[in-house]
Length: 251
Image (cartoon, helix red, strand yellow):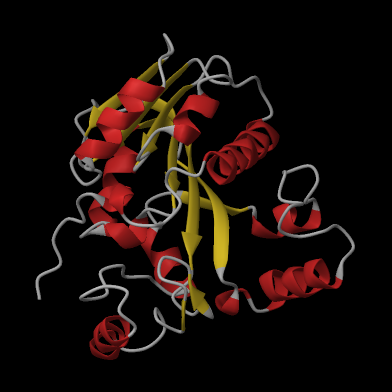
């Protein structure tokens, strides 16, 4: 089966319309980018690749100079346009593998949990690198193929097993006709982002859950936090996910 585009993803029960959870993610993005960049965000332009129904972009628009959210999901983009109206916020129907913007356009690109949904993550990363200004940064949040539970369908080990078995598994579980999402391992992700300079923020976020607004998932000083920190620092290849800041090299 040829793996084409995944249209109308917003119609699936994946939480794209959950205002609370999406704003939590946006709050974490802002805190991490403020910490990493060390300068005011209100003079920076943002492109959100795969912004879906626009909840995150609406929050980001309160902190950045301008925000453009793109997605191939036409119903999601139309919903975003109708729901969120700000002078510095724009939504466009767009292809992550063929961005319609000129080279060196954006200070920041957001690519959060998107790579597994596109037919060619490599082309998407190349396009992100192209539209970033020299010294610009991509906020890249990604899940690991070797995670215990696949979050899109809530099925244990779905992403880890061979794809023919995954297709059968998801069909028998009556979740979908086939398993579209295609996750990479830790090493595959590192290879994927090689055009850019990788700054791994995962351990820093786990170590400072209050500062980065992830305390709803992990409590500072808890056993869960200690285990997560050990895994991400010593055996990152089994961590369920990562938060990386990807810099475009200066000219």
